[in-house]
Image (cartoon, rainbow, N blue to C red; front, side, top):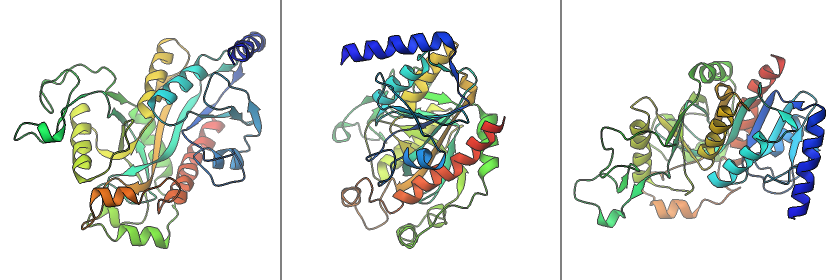
Length: 332
């Protein structure tokens, strides 16, 4: 295996010496359920099939082979979790076969949705990406009376301590003008609805949760743990406000985006990418808390990948909304 990776890297270096491949847009997907085409889709499949990403580029130093088309669109599959996303994006960013200096990056994947902000099948453009792992934690059964959570800042001794300690990767701020441009370009895109989604959202009391799916601006929490429940939803709302100085609003919960952002931040320092050309789009496959009358444990037990009531509509929304932006960027 090591010999194969070294051989591939040497070959890539030799090819890059000729002329690196210019990339216009990198589409970042996180998981796939089977093959890249022809079966039940994950986050990559619609991009491969609909954007004609027929060129397979070996990528042994990353999680999955790359896909590319003639328009300069390159798709990378990171794998699930911040460790895989960080290592895969760093491997791509340092690959001498590609010129990524002028590339735009679009993270497009499914997520849990805060019912206060949006409904199933909705698509949220994030301006803030907040880490849900870098912290201290005390088990909820042992927290002092009066504490709202056992989750503390990494350098803090109590919840939401002020002054807020310096940022060590707990929060990433995307280019606000670019995010706003993407939102305005796509805010009227009609998203897929279904009878199952209508039934699921009517169980919730929040006005936005009961709406048909729509495009919004909303920020994301990225953590390695798939969490669920009303109390953790409240924590995520407060955590995003705390980490962003009150500027962010929690909408979606995902598992990879801080890993991707950390690698892109370092790659930008090395002059390999432009950090002002990064977008994060997360679409709602499930609510992050149960409806009234259902416990968090009961609701979580119903959730299996591929069987969420909005699984396929969320994948559709990620491609449909994201592709409007990709097509516009390719024309630039």
